[in-house]
Image 1 (tube, rainbow, N blue to C red):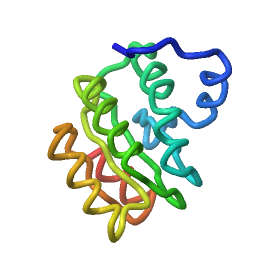
Image 2 (image 1 turned 180 degrees about the vertical axis):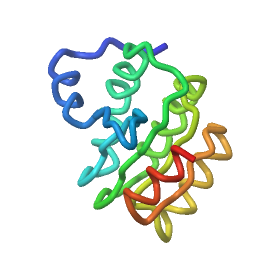
Image 3 (image 1 turned 60 degrees about the vertical axis):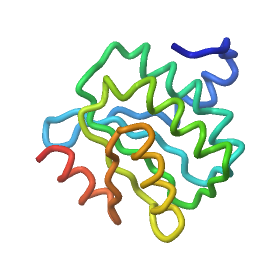
Amino acid sequence: MIDKEISPDLINEVKPRLKWITYKDIEILIQDYTGLQGDDIARIMPAMTDQILKSGKKDILNIVDIRDSFGNKAAVNAFIKYSKIIRHLLKKTAALGVAGVKKVLLNSINRVSRVGARAFKSDEEAKEWLIS
């Protein structure tokens, strides 16, 4: 459950960043955080989570795209908090744009949230792993 009311403006802002695609006849959710700074990631995370919950879907194959984005403590805390809320809906999670320090942060998020996201260098690799 999301702990605060989400404004319609924020919902409209995140809708283009939450995409359902079909890859080899299998549906995959892409959460697009590209180009965002940590505070912006934390700010939109409740709305992203709310929209996933409202989708009514489960066993979700999920890609979290953080290419060209920069995290901070607020972003990491948001990923942990909101991943815990939706983890029961996620079958597998792949992450794009994770290298260096971001890999350490991903490991921390995985340890606490128990989502088990795995880092990939390309969209294609991530999608193939998700459907395997």
